[in-house]
Length: 201
Ligand code: C5P
Image (cartoon, rainbow, N blue to C red; front, side, top):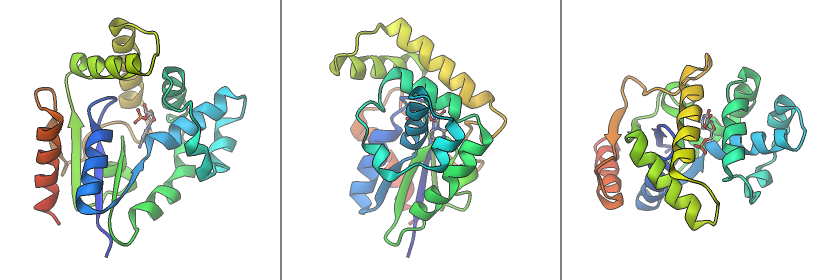
């Protein structure tokens, strides 16, 4: 039987960490849908047309090493506003969600557009400052030279673009449980997510 967990929210709110932990806990497959948009963004930076790039995306492109770079994140949020790019990625995401054995998908529009019937939906969020601090530390650890202010400004720009776009804007589904991780440890946030999902499983 398939069981879909939809986890949405803004950049660096903890979606990835929570999704991976939830998938391990329940034995579900996990898809980070942001990687699809990042892969299209990276191919646009290579000079390809983003709609062609989305239509010809091969799963192997998700292995590209540069997908976490800040410039790829910005390119991802630009291509993500193009309706034809989003349309080209729908079938792959829905097929993944329908896997036997259960699936966790994290992104911006999983609960609203990709899997509106998902039995478990979470909207993971945190204050701008907390999210920027987490992303800043993560980037610094990877050796990326940046500042807290730069990370905060880039993150706000990306969130504003993701929230303002006409197609599949970032917003919680009406039936999503909001999980604010600003004051939660990773363990506490993961525990709260697992508890929410367990009640619907
Ligand atoms: O989640 P991540 O930060 O990797 O996503 C990169 C960008 O991809 C987001 O800023 C957003 O514009 C886009 N995205 C989206 N819909 C999704 C997942 C990501 O529009 N389901």
